[in-house]
Image 1 (tube, rainbow over the protein chains, first blue to last red):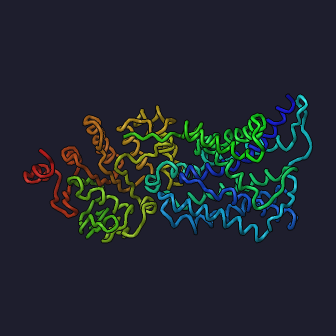
Image 2: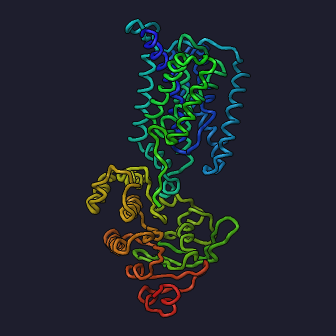
Length: 296
Length: 237
């Protein structure tokens, strides 16, 4: 029983990071119906910026995270402007290839600048255990990762539903032409989505590697992205709440189903892919996604 | 001719290598309702899209004396042109209220909420369903919402692209009555593209008939509706 509970806690804290990256994916998917395959690498790069700010520039950790989020938002906005916007948003294949290219390029640049050796990342949350429940340890790390995803989801929901730029973003997600006809400039609105997504991703990686059991390295998000894509697909790709539940579910599948089904740890990535496959087969719109229905 | 709100001369436009409009001349005076008639494929929709900056075009287009020939759609909204595209220009995933709110996107005044409230009172069905997705409304309700959404930007010129498309005749008649009311009460100038010539000419001051991207006839609505050649060829009566 205590082992089972422990696995649930571990699964939730892993799932929180998948949820954050999944929310970043959802922000871009909502606006463009495009999956940004470089989202994990954006996040990894942001994580290194945070590390540099904290260890080399001596900023307090949370300030470093916030400044790192801002810097990665500006970088993503620049990438959107130069590499994404020149292409027709309705033609997905070139854009997907560009995001795959960005995936490789950002990974390589991070390797050149910071080397491929893992680096210790300063702690973001208080260490130690918050409480013991039936012999299982609930760490402060798990508690705070859960709080973080709730704060981010709440913040994004407010941003989308209560601000003018959020309204423009939702309008562009719904109908490009009608958005232009009310005076919305589509390019800058999508750029806003890329910037927000990059900031959320940077926070996601910072939280992930702030675990005492993990380190930051250029490959840190390569498999994480697959978990996050599965999480976003499970949640419905256009739902922030779905991304959270999807992320936590994938984390739990990884930490519970894998050991109990006797799957070797090396194959835990497979669990995510199996979930992705099942979603695509049986519920392509995910748990909370908007089904594509058109009035004719 | 200072009362010409919209003055278009030698308008050419098309899609890629395909030229659709071959030099159209027309104008809309302040406060008028002008209708552009024509068969399928005559270039009616292209004309509106060219005016509102949705597609590339050449020629002279002046709005209240200022050239708008190179302006893009989002800038034209700021200049006072609102375009209701063919097939309902709503944002289906957004709520009815958000559709109206986004219609006022270019405005920064504090009367937006009051204007939304006014539309809810004028069309109670929109008020009753303000939290529903616009896509769940009926065709006629969506068309009315699209018009209200366009008017939320407080335009001087409203472009309507086949508002009757796909709607039951009784709903269309009601819709056109409301257009006439809006024209009278708000003083909004309107350029309407229609296939339903009878109804459109019924509320219009003047009309143009285009054929294969060229001007075929023009005149006061009352004359067009009684011109035998036009009646036979274009009005289907």
